[in-house]
Structure formats: structure tokens, C-alpha cells
Length: 368
Image (cartoon, rainbow, N blue to C red; front, side, top):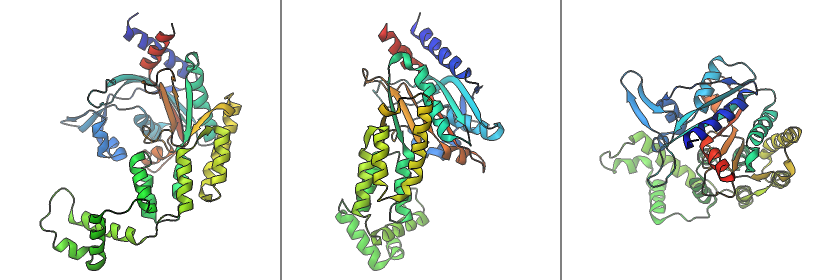
């Protein structure tokens, strides 16, 4: 059997498994409107997707994933609860020399359920664990909702919290902002000089002597940015105790029950985390009810922050520890906020995941 035949056979096996769960098959178009993805992820996605232009439909994008079109379809015509599955190619532009595939098959399963979201998390995770069980892969779990709740609880300005929220999926930028807002990193001489001038003369005077417009930003945008810098400089730094709580959350790696206990202790300093922790507790109960070994399940509070931009709650993945050079075979998580953005005024809790059959077939071949 050829490599392609093995991959397609594995994709068919996965697809059949998910169809057997009572899910509806979705066949999303290969060309998707680029505007939807650009609105969701900003211009950054151009570096990761193939964009083209259609004379009638405008800017289009080769399908970078299935989740967005599945959500769009469900918000228009779906019932509740609803289960969907799909199988097909997705396209991701890779950095030069990476050797990673730019086109590959993806099989996925999505569950929309308003009444029992934690049970839905457990259902999706346990199904993925079952269908991937022949490989002995290592599961990973996390909860971006915990970090978002911690940021929302900080005693600082709304603009600072919004900036941290915006960059939760960009760990380096998030760390840089956190260090800036806590005062751990001293401002550069150039920034100090700018702030001193702003304080003394105001943004209007700075703009008046700045000369002709250069670049893409409008005067209004530059003026707003200068005032933001001035307001931020006047705000007190994030307190040491709260900053240390964030540091401990970001570094947390434990089994799921131990992580819950440690996070519950940290919530004393950031009580806004409690609702997210209550969801975590209900999810643990649901996972146990689904037959998952919760006591040994790994949990990492930062898991999923670099590759799962639309996930906002429970996240998971399955990887082969013997092949650290390979990306995860499967990833998934909760994306309630995405349904709100795409739902035309409606929303519904949703969770799902995807599997890469090519990686699965490759690993199965290694076991033979």
C-alpha cells in the first residue's frame, strides 16, 4: 500500500468512527472568504495561509481549517445539541526550510451543547483518546479560561487587561507586556523622554511639530496611541502579589487534580478565578464519568497558547513522546467566543478537535 493510500485509509477509519457517534457530515468549500479569517485573526494570518483573489467573490483563502466554516453553518441552520464531523485537506503556509507539510488531510469532530458544556468537553476528549488508543500517545490538557479569568481579575486598568487578553496566544508578547505593566523592566531612555514631553506639552503639541504624515497610521490613530501611553504611564504598576500569581499559573505543570488544588490556593489572591475553577471541577467529574483516568492526566496552564488562537477554555492534545520532532497528532478545545463572533448575535458553547491522519499513519507504520 502506498503512503497516500495508508493516509487515506486512516482518514476513512477516523471519519467512520466519528460518524458512528451520530454526527452530521460537513463538507466545507475549499475556497473560503478571506475576510472572515482576517477579521478573526488580523493580518498575521496572511503569513500562515494561501490568499488569492476572485473577480466576483473578492479576496479568498484556501481552507486553513474546518472549524470556522462549521461554526458558520451551525449558527445559520444547526439544532441543539449538534455533532459534526468532516474530512478533507487544509492548507497552511510554512516557514522556509521547516520541512512541514503545507497541505494535509484533517479529520475532526465538533460538539455544540448549551446544557452540559463540561460533559461535552469530556465526550470529545474521551472519543479522541479512544480512537487514538492503539498508539499509546501522551495526552496533554490545559485551560485557557483559567488564565483569562486571572487576567480579568487583575487590579489594573481595563486597557492593560485588554492588551494582555489580546496577546494571551502570543506568549512572548504577553510576557513583555506583563513585565512592562509590573515595572519589572525599566523604560528605555527614548520612552522616558517621550513620556516626559507628553506630560509637559501634551499630545497636541507633539503632533504639531512632528512634520508630514509618514506610514499607514492616521493622525487620529497616532494621537490615540500617544494618549494611551500617557494614561498608562500614570497608572500604578500591577501589584507584586498578583504578578506572582500570574507567574505561578504560567509555570504550572501538574496532574489535573493537583493543578486544581494549586489553582484553588492561588485564587485567594485573584478571586475572579473561582468561576473558571468551578468549571474545571465539573469537567474533572465529567471526565471521570466518561472513564478517563483523571488522577494521572497531565495539565499545563500554558498549553495551547501558541497554536490554538480561537480556543478560550479547555484545550487538549495527543503527542508521541518518542517523536518530539513531530507536531501533535491531535489537538482540540473549547471555542465559545468564536460562536459569539460568527453567530450574528447568537452564541452556543462549542468544543471540538482535529486529527492529522498522515501523522497517525506514519506512527502506526513505525510500530509495525
